[in-house]
Amino acid sequence: MHRRSAVQVRAAVVVAAALVLCGCADLEQQQVEQVASAFAAADPSARCQMLAPATVATVEAQSGRPCAQATAQLELLHGPVQSSTVWGDQAQVHLVGDTVFLTKTGSGWKVTAAGCRSRGDAPYACRVEGP
Image 1: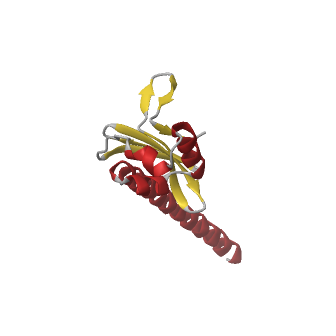
Image 2: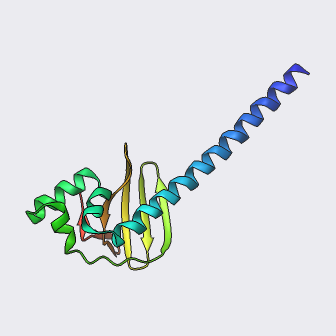
Image 3: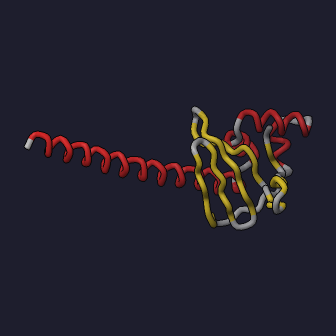
């Protein structure tokens, strides 16, 4: 009888772990969708806060201006989320009119590329992107 209850306990632990992991995946997906949706609609300063640090550095280096000035001229389309995918600490969100790529950092999900358009087999063409 003791052996049977140990098996039941292990089975319960496995089921509980699976439920927790599913919940985490759903939470991660909600978070990336929220960040991606907010990015295009945000003011330039807020956009810079949502960018990954390496992306901020790239935007500033390419434009020769502070991030907020560089992103002020970006006209990004924004609309409802069509789909999203999270794999580990990376994510992709398809919005109506835009695709946004994100990475998970110590301070949450940050945008690494936005204003992206698919080019078939070639890499996405993005208006904002980091290294």
